[in-house]
Length: 301
Image 1: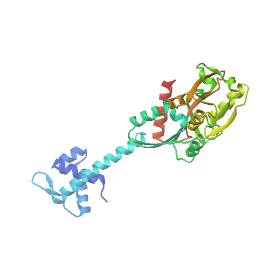
Image 2: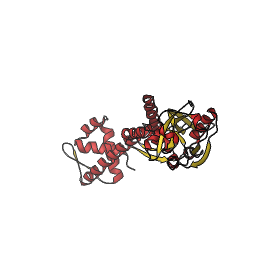
Image 3: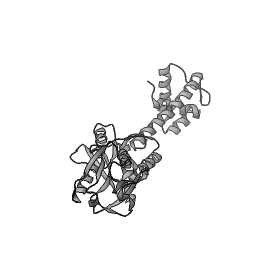
């Protein structure tokens, strides 16, 4: 089997035209270099170098090998670079998930765009799903990280990093009596309203936060309809089925038939954003991504 050191020796000799000069170029003595050339010729069964009164030059077989050897050495050098970049987290693949509400916060698309621009050698795969589905995909290694709306509890195989917190707003149909005013509204004023919420298994953290906030305000919300996605929740609000409470970033949808109002007396009613990953995942690419997310979050605060 041919060795890279044999090919390096052969290319150096062919390019320099003298074994002594090739030895100096490679930082070795002339006798070991001569032996490398001889072993290569013996393996191939052909004469690769024509010995001249002064120096050497490739034979016809040597010229054919020279072209291939240069290509192989360049490929080998490129392979080493690929491996080194992968070890530094500059090449590879990263699968990232997010909930529908997380995707609407400008932080998430912003940091994803920055990562893809900074590490163009990393293939980024994106997936939108509910919190439960995202966590299941993380556990089964279908995802490497996920932006979710609730902190993890009782899941030792996963780890979450708090990223940011945003307020939640009341979403009303435009023809609702409470939609005529633009000021902040006490949460207790919604005690007799019909609520449209997203299914708990989809928006686990936000669903529970709404229930807790309402109970702190002295009532239990009357949930008349649940939707599979938060965007669908807003469609049902616009259709007049009830009111809902959503993260402030959902305003970016600017859907027709919906008015947003701030809520008061509900400090606990906030929408957090967390980055969930597998505990102990030592992937260099993931480490780079987490560092970028945490750095970007610190500037956001």
